[in-house]
Length: 433
Image 1 (tube, rainbow, N blue to C red):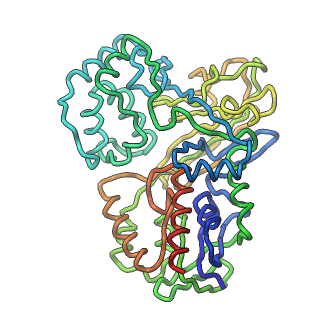
Image 2: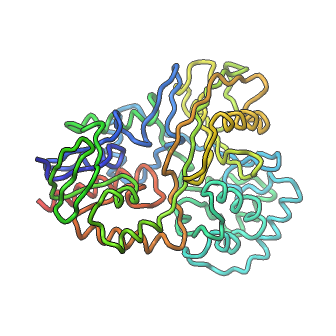
């Protein structure tokens, strides 16, 4: 009988399983490991579940990944852009104002100069924080429209407490100087990133899974009794555990726990999130030996006239992601969880917009496009999130339940953080033996 049950064989669950030194059972509801870090191969094209890139700073993670991937990893300099007002601007917007049309550039500079200089706390709305940090022009033309498109809520509802690691903050002097001269400085946590030479993100998942003795596929929790430390599985079997590790979305975990108290259930109702449909697009290039979209890795689209908020080109990052003469793309569209989406209509809109935005040339031909829905994609950082998560996590911890990873912890994070979450949770449990 397992001492520990782990829910989810995604990156966090696999990392936890790798480092545990006591009996465990790893559950995976699908037939393959990886979750949202898995990859799909179709007709020679490789697609991840949208862009998944490794940004490694932790020495432990660097050493681990190097050891399990051998030579299947390479360091890449980011080539990310923004398309707005028929102009293509290097990312980040706030550090490359010289690329803007004159009228927009003036508005952005005026906004920077007219800032009140007030330093706002992270609990402020994203709108207020952006106005104080970047000024009215940058807020109007990028920060507000892009983030509202991505998160699907008003920038006045969205809090700024997720921004620190992810939103580049050039100095006032750097933003002002960028209006007259291109900056050579690379801003942001992902200015350089690691990617896989072969097999996409699945190669990392397979390397982790190879170190796990067994995974119970097509198995998931049906009901959990925290007081008894018992779990009824989807196949009807009932198991006891000493500790439970969950990497599923936090709301789903609470929905499974039959004896969660009213305060925890009330907190669960305050959790909000969006859904993303990632469309995988295979393209036959009009010029077979040249990259599409100017070789760009991904492009952000803040304007409402484009249905997607981001388009990435896997094969520009790593040519092995598509057959020779072809390209593989990911196209991301955000929705509210209860939206009714006609994927055929959305693909038609995507097709038109890819050509209109010059991501594709008239000679490029779309071979196929298919939807890969991400039911729980981005956690909504609103005014209720912090208190709700604290209430839930405090009760879970008291009942030997560890809810970890991007969705288990109900946060905005990246792959290195997921690996660390699994690793450190395993170390905590090992000390409890």
